[in-house]
Image (cartoon, rainbow, N blue to C red; front, side, top):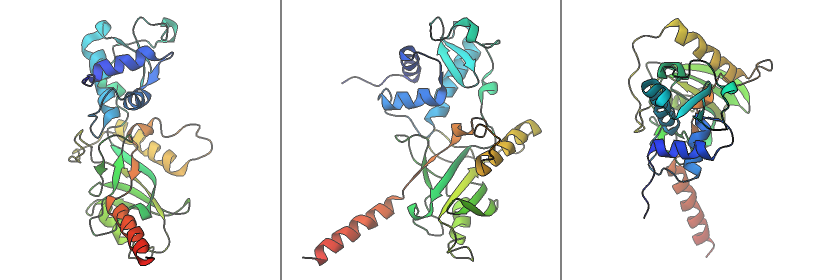
Length: 260
C-alpha cells in the first residue's frame, strides 16, 4: 500500500501538473481531490500556504516555488510561469502572504435547521469537504441573522460565545423570523481543529482591511467587483449536526414500522 505524499511533494505534484499558476486554495483542493493527502487536519489551505511561504522565506531562490501574485504560485523553471508574469521580490516574507490575522474563520448563509439547538449547540464547519470538522460554538466575533437573504439583525459575541448567542435568538423576539445566519470569527483555528486564544492587540493595518472585508462579504455591494479581498481563504462550509441526521433516520424507521 502506497503511503501518502508529504505536503511538499503533494504541492509540487499539483503545480507540475498544472498549465498555469494556482492560488493556494486551488492547490489544496486538487491535493484533496487527487487523494494525495489523507490526513489534512482542520486547516489544509493554511497548511499549504504555510509550506509555500516558509520555503520562499527560508530557501530564497533555492525554493521550488515562484510567487506570481498574492496567494498565487507556480514552480520555478516551468513554462507555466514565464518570467514576465512574475512579481518583483519573489522571496517575500511569510507575513506578506497571510490573508488575515484578525478574521480567522467565517461562514456564510449557514442553515438554522442544520443545527441541533441547545445552550451549547454544535456549529460544525469544514474548510474543505474532506477536512477535519471544527466546532465553532465557542467562537467570538460578529454574526448576522437572515430572513431569506434579507439581513434582519447584526450582533456581536464577546462575553457570550457564538453558539450561546444564536441559541438565545431561537427563544427571543427573533425566534420565528430567521432561517439562516452568517458569522465572522476572531479566535484562530489550530490545525487540530481547536479554537485558540484571542490575541491581545491588533494594529490599524490589520483592522482596516478586515473590517472592509467583512462589509464587502456581508453586504455584497454591486460596485465591489470581488469578494472581501481573498477572504475566501478562511471560509468554512457548514456541516449538518450528526444528531439531526440520526433523528431523520430514526423518524424514517419509526414511519416504516408504523406502516407494517
